Length: 155
Image (cartoon, rainbow, N blue to C red; front, side, top):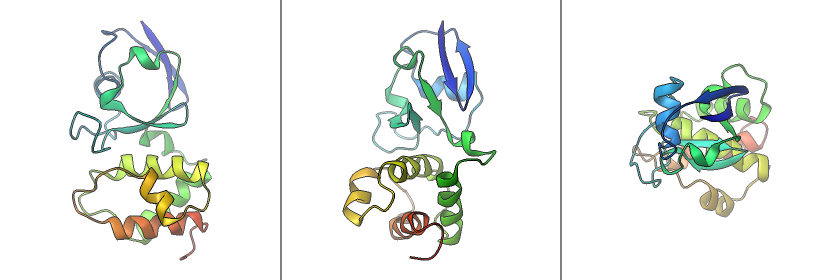
């Protein structure tokens, strides 16, 4: 039995300890915002925050997060997180999404970046945001990150 806190709610799950966190989130807790992409931790579609750190959920086992706090994109649904709200608004203002598949992981990575570095440089953005966007909207992503860092105003 593994216990953890997911999006502010303490939960338990009984499954094999080597089950990837991604599958537990999607199948056991029905949190579909965390996407399966490559399955080897490279693309970032499965990005979640574990104890505030960016983690690729396809590459970490459920046993490794026993007792941890996990935040998925659904954890931002009720508002209350000023940085996440600015990031979501900036994504819309800069028209970042095309297909939208990378958006949940990209937003979580950006929130983690802005929590650590409130006004990142382009070099810091490049170092922290390693998620892949299949549509290639990287210029809009960068603009959205700068907009969110500026409090939602156009930089």
